[in-house]
Image (cartoon, rainbow, N blue to C red; front, side, top):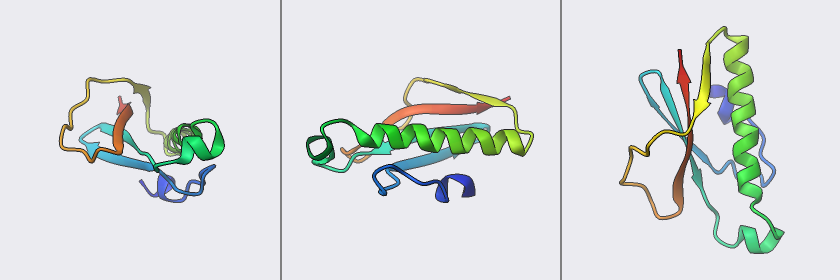
Length: 91
């Protein structure tokens, strides 16, 4: 998970949270209130794409096989500003 800690973000907020569960990595977005209104679009959704890219390219570099999937959301005890986006499943 070091690769995502070091990943840049468009909003400089690193709004992602990742939960590792065996061979699954669940990506969650932590919204900053007012950012959509401030920028006119969901810049933090772009951040999720940036972190996904860093995660996937690092996995390839480390010879880890896997792919992104939208899975049924497992965690229900999340803060109100946090939502499930996708998961990376290691083969």
